[in-house]
Length: 513
Ligand SMILES: Nc1nc2c(ncn2[C@@H]2O[C@H](COP(=O)(O)OP(=O)(O)OP(=O)(O)O)[C@@H](O)[C@H]2O)c(=O)[nH]1
Ligand SMILES: [Mg+2]
Image 1 (cartoon, rainbow, N blue to C red):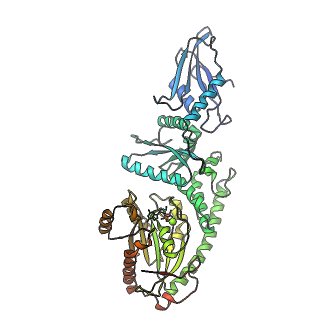
Image 2 (cartoon, rainbow, N blue to C red; image 1 turned 180 degrees about the vertical axis):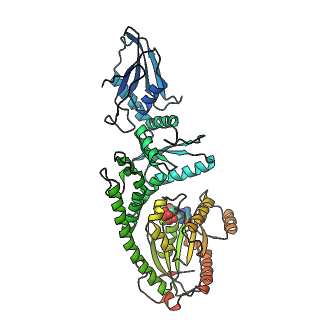
C-alpha cells in the first residue's frame, strides 16, 4: 500500500482488514520519509505500538531527493531490562542485507516464548486486569483480588493486574493514552487478548479503548453478567439474566452497530440469546418487553405458591450471604440434597427450597420448616442484575428468619458483612429477624472464632462437619421460639400436611440436634 502525505505527516488508513487479534503482530511494516532529518518521533513510536506494526522505518530524504540514512524501530518481547522497543540507526539502506520476513518470524517466536503458559481449561481468554482509581491502594488491591476471582470463576486466565492511580481520570479512556500504550505492550508480551477493568466504563470509553488497542474490553458489570449467563439453568434464571444483559446493552448501542460484536461478545462470545450483529435498539427493546412479560407470568405462579405457603403457616428460613460463603454446602447438609457446591463465585443462581422436619429431641419435635438457598451477593452487584432478579429477592421478603452466613476465613469478611447489611436495607429485608452464622470455622484458629462470634453476637459452624452444628441448632431454636411467640404458625400445619409447598420436591427431613 502506498500512502501519500504532506510535509507534516501521513494519515494511516483503517487497518482492520489486516491480521487483527492480539497477540500477533500486524504483518505490516510502515516505511515513510522524514523531510527535516528528524529521527523517529514520539508519534511514530505510538503508531508502531498501538497498530502493532511489524516495524516502523523513517527514511531521511534530503532536498535533492536523495536518501541514505534511516531509523527503524520494533517492539520487544518481555526482557529483564524491561525495554519495550528497539530503535536502530542505519547509515545506508543500500548495503542492508536483511531477510525481513525471517527476522519478523523469529521476533514473533520470541513473543510466543514469553507468553505465560496457562492450563488449557476454561474459555481460553487471557486477560489483564486493570484498576484505575483514586481510592486507597488497599481498597484497590482487595477489589482487584475479587475481580480476579470473578474472572477465574468465569474461566478466564488472569495474566497480570495493573493498578493506575492518576491525578485525574481520563474521560475518553479512563486510564489515559500513555498508560494504555504500556498496557498494550504488556498484552503483546504476555499474549493477552482481553482487558477487564475493575471500574465500570462508559459506552464511549469501551469503544475508544477497543478501537485503540484492538483488544476486547469489558468491565466489572459485564463480567458479572457474563458469569450469571454461564450459570443460569432454570427458565426463569435464563430469562432474568438475558433481561439484565439487554438492559445493560441498550444504552450502549451506538447508532452504528459496528462495535456491537464487541459489546455482545462478553467472554468467549457468550452474549445474550439471539443478539448478533444485526440487532438494533428497536429489536432490543422489543425483546426486553417480551422478557418482562414472560417473567411477570412466572412471577404470578410464584405468588400463588407463596400464598399457599403462607396459608399453611410453615416458617420459612432463608440462607443468605456473600457469594462463596458456603450457603449451598449448609443447605445440602441440612436437607441431604446435592445442589451444586463450588469454590467459585456465584455457583448458585437458581433458588432452591426444601421442607424439613425437626427431630425427636427438639423443642419443635415433628414441626416443619421450609429452608431456602439463594444466589449470593457481592460488592457493587450491577443495578441491572438487581432489577432483573428482583422477583427472586422479593421472595426473600416472605422469610421469617434470615440465616446470614459469613465465611470467617475470608480476609475481608467484615466488609462482606457490611455489604450484606447494605443490600438487606436496599431490598427492604432489614426488618426480618436474622441469625448471624460464621462458617468455615475449621479454617481459622478457635481463639479468633470465639472472639469474632462474641463481638458480632453470632454462632460458628463448619458446613463440612455435621458435628459442628450444635450451637447453631440451639440458636436457631431460640430464634424460632422468639418469632413464633409473636407470629402464630398454625400448629396443625407445622407438621402434618404433605402438600408440595416448595418449588422443588417436598422432602421430610429430620433435623437432629
Ligand atoms: N473449609 C471449608 N470449606 C467450606 C465450608 N463450607 C463450604 N466450603 C467450601 O466453600 C466453597 C463454596 O461453597 P458453596 O456452598 O458453593 O458457597 P455458596 O455460598 O453457596 O456460594 P454461591 O452459591 O457461589 O454464592 C466450596 O468449595 C465449599 O466446599 C467449610 O465449613 N469449611
Ligand atoms: Mg450456592
